[in-house]
Length: 343
Image (cartoon, rainbow, N blue to C red; front, side):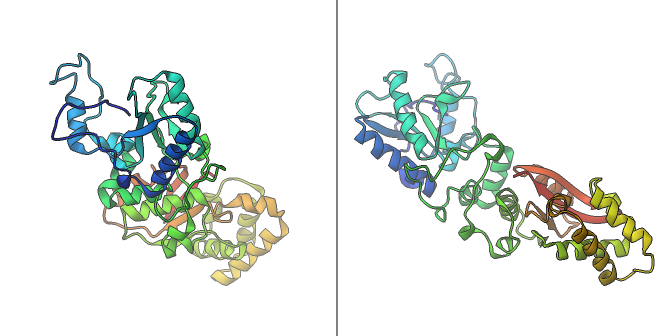
């Protein structure tokens, strides 16, 4: 969000690109260079915004007159991506804010090539404003929790704007996100080793990174599984609850077949015996149907070891993770923490 200038001589807009997230900075620098080549005298008026400056913006139109009306409703800079180093305001070097909408539109067409989103596309238009394209229009409560717990770098990682991510190019290496996958796109090189070992797809992997940043004590117990691993995991639970399968999984032919095998083989009581029977049931089914049975099989789910301390807070946080489809803290009669995600 652009809030305009301030007349306070002690606090002024910060145009230092060094305070931006590394990958976003590269996008902005590339966009500015391309604007210069196109004859557009674009410059960054403001990038990172401090809490002190946000307070001055908030006072304008309230305790500071003029202007006659407020320029922002945000009391904290963490309600704007400026406060995270993920937004800039771009104006003309020669005419500052006094440029026609068409000029800002030309700048926007260039910046979009480098993965930036434009405030001019919003319902409440903000022509000078550009931000990292993988961010939602405004920071969520989740983003504020992450920056409070782990700092801006953790937010940069979550939105794929950290130093470990590749720099954008005009050829479109960094594309604007689709509505269904808008939150994050992370690079494996920056993923903690234990999370990388889970072999998750993007949404689940990045949710795990956010969860680890907020609650570093949590232990991930399972990610992507081969069908042999899935059968063994199910068998371990069936040993404790013979109705576990039908009580846990969505109704399907495979779910019914697995439960029927368990019911028809009461003599199978060990994990190994039950796993063998479930695996044989999987192998008789079509592979496409098996892959729909559990999101562990596609790498779109992970399990977390349940904890007692702050359990309600942690579970509430998990339920707000980006692109989460379902969170279970019980599977059948057993305490299990399972999170699965849309792609």
